[in-house]
Length: 144
Image 1 (cartoon, helix red, strand yellow):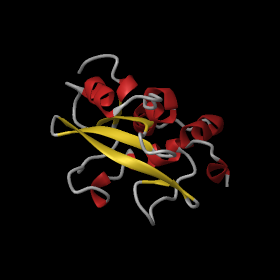
Image 2 (cartoon, one colour):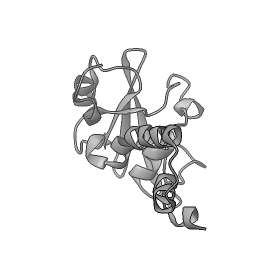
Image 3 (cartoon, helix red, strand yellow):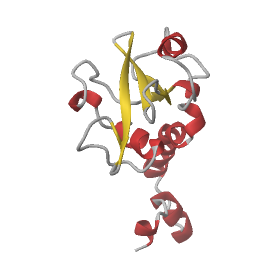
């Protein structure tokens, strides 16, 4: 089936000449919502420390996040705004992949991890982080 090969339903409908405005609008919204998460430059900021991450996230809305190198060798850190405060979670690299804790270190890349937690709460890994990775730090160019 074509959809299993990665083609979007919207494109398939275009090829077949099917017009569904409601579906097209939803597909466009979904594409726009997902786009920043697919671009590593919108959330990966490289080698910064915890204080710098907190400064970058200061005054940002809840669920805004960034990922940077951790002070722990071979690890990354996810810093995210929760109730107007910045929380930090270590992202571990193990033989099975990247993740916040075993046995959830299943992701082959930071991008895969971010795409998963875009819609899944971090609560299972940290009781104080009850949100998702909804807003990449660099995708907030225009204020709400």
